[in-house]
Amino acid sequence: MTLSEYLKTIDKEGVDALARHCGTSVGQLKQVAYGNRRAGAGLAVNLDRETGGEVTCESLRPDIDWGYLRQGKG
Image (tube, rainbow, N blue to C red; front, top):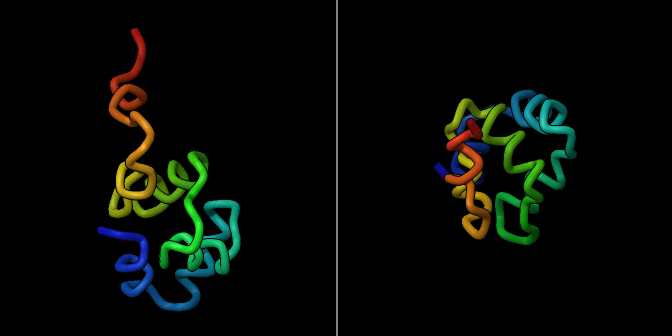
């Protein structure tokens, strides 16, 4: 699911809470959702976590090798 699709599934309070939990603003979320800005790696991780994987790091930043990071070390 894209971030713009996800934002449509939650109410204003939910969007406010998502932004707060991700350490960003509602304005920044909307800029990323509508393609005006690119999510930083940290924001991509936070959105993946806070949406329970509904919006993935991979969908936000396909240019990063998330598979390598998800494999873990060891």
